[in-house]
Length: 219
Image 1 (cartoon, rainbow, N blue to C red):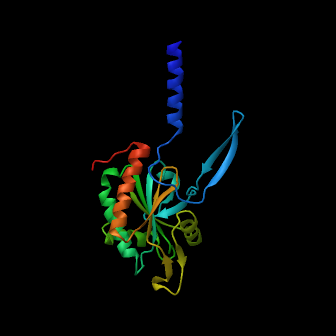
Image 2: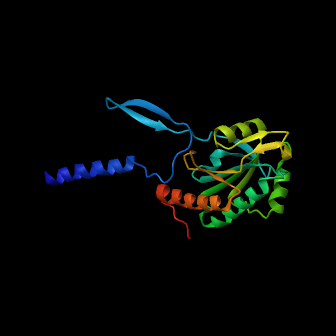
Image 3: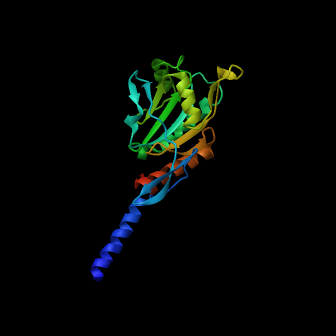
């Protein structure tokens, strides 16, 4: 009898551990509370917004989908190649982060969305990559529908991106670097022009992978 009770208790504990996922970082976005019935009991569940599926052309003129990056943690930003202000330092920091996280390249995907697709055709993106010494093993540059990109930046990635004729370059946008988990939920937003913020992103990225996915880099 004691053995049976012990097995029941152990089974219950294992079940509880499986249901409670460790949380390394906060969730971002306006959440919904969904109430549903389970075994005759009303249960509340918190549902956080996820990045919607998207399709773009990459720097090699290949149509790619967000589903191709499933199973990876993302670091995303929004830029344009002719940006005269915050893009150069932001992209320099993004490149630095990609180098710092080389040991995690199989588990991390860097994504840069162009907010000026009319100018940033794939050939322009390729030249930008070459001129800036960027390695694209796990870093993709995407160009596509401008309106959808701006909408997704603001409403899903929670960074500003909009045409504005009164600012240098004709586009107003933030320097945000966005950390997205494997479920497509935003877990952090960082000032991409500031070294200290990007260093924090590096630490948080490693923490997220270790605590929630059991992945530890070599550093």
